[in-house]
Amino acid sequence: MAEADLDVVIRQLAKQQTKALMAAAKRRRDRYAGLAAKAKNRETKEKYRLIAKNTMLQGAAAAKRLQISADNAADSYARSMRQAAEAEPAKKPAKAEAKKAKA
Image (tube, rainbow, N blue to C red; front, top):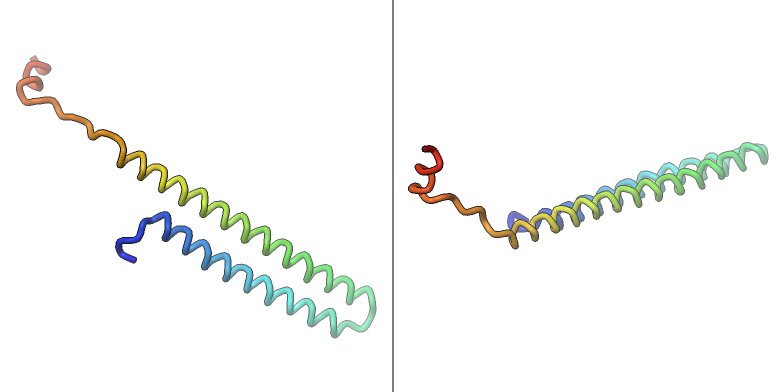
């Protein structure tokens, strides 16, 4: 991975973070689903089910925002590197021209 482009690395890290975020959201959802199953009355059961549903919605939205941000950063980096590779290097003035410019 020492020679990998940075944009590829950015995308890979974002993918790992997205997976971790979704796994955490699923654990939290499962916890609330378990509480809903143990609830004694209907109101409490519905409350925990709603919390579990909202947990997954919020987790998915956060993961999507994370992925979009990483894609934008990776695309921006790749574009800037492509433009830098295509640009002509700045020419330095010859020593004689530099002396004339000083005088």
